[in-house]
Amino acid sequence: MKKVRSFFAPESFNNPDDLLRAIIWIAGFSVAIILALSTAAVYQITSHEVIRDSQDAAVRVSWAMFEQQRKLLTSVSADGSYQIKIDPTRVSVIDGYFRTYLRNFNILKIKIYTPEQQIIYSTDTKIIGETDGANPGLKRALGGSVDSHMEKKDRMLDLSDETKFGVAVVETYVPLMVGERVIGVFELYSDVTTYRYQTIRVVALTLGSLAIILFVVFACSYLVIRKTVQLLKETQQDLADKVIQREEAVAHVKQLEGIIPICMHCKKIRDDQKSWQQLEQYISNHSEARFSHGICPECYEKEIRKLEEREP
Image (cartoon, rainbow, N blue to C red; front, side):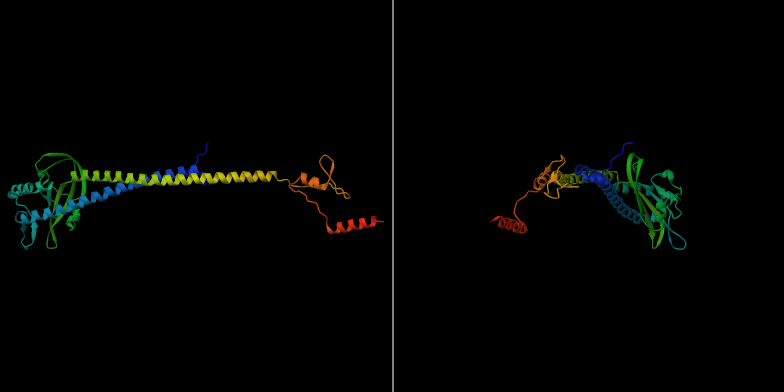
């Protein structure tokens, strides 16, 4: 079975080309991760801003309508407390007011809930009287907190009873409070389709700009790294050449090894061809050593005595 070579194996970094390829792969992977995370982050941040702006607008609109139509939307109980309640004979008046008022705020739909989670009014008249007991956003609003989230609807009727397709809406639940008590909840559907497209456009522009910046940065880094790798290759080649030269020099060095036969009298050495050579000649032939001749003090004295003895 053929072994797959990894760019991240320690032996891969001995080769500058493998090191450069590993850096390119790491850079490419890093760019992909950066772009993916940046896209997700920008989309989430922009979407959150759209939801927050829609929520703020929905809260202001809800309280403005409630204050203007308080007499038609509430009644006073026997203990003097307010409760959300609509006179059936006044529904058409309230409906006309809501449709006219909300048309200027890109609101597609409105519901009014009692504390018992019953719908007592909606621009979608078919759901009036229903109870929405499994709605977490409604429950949070009945607890006194404003709740919003964005959804995409395949189709939806606007306040003019015209069908809209593929709309993005922010559903906002606004608690209606009198004193410290929640007497009801407004639910508004804000059309944010245009803002959603703008969000996508912002994300695309951000992604494109970031991609260009990263490309320029990594391209410049690549040029620097490639130059460094080239210098590293040249340095490695120089070292390899020097190692070869050293090995060749060592191979050419002559060394005397083993047992050398030498005459105990004349000090001649027997070579491999069984010929006897002078000591100086043998050593010169089998090493890099060279000889210079002189005379030691002892030999000098001996030679002087010999000369003196020869004189008559």
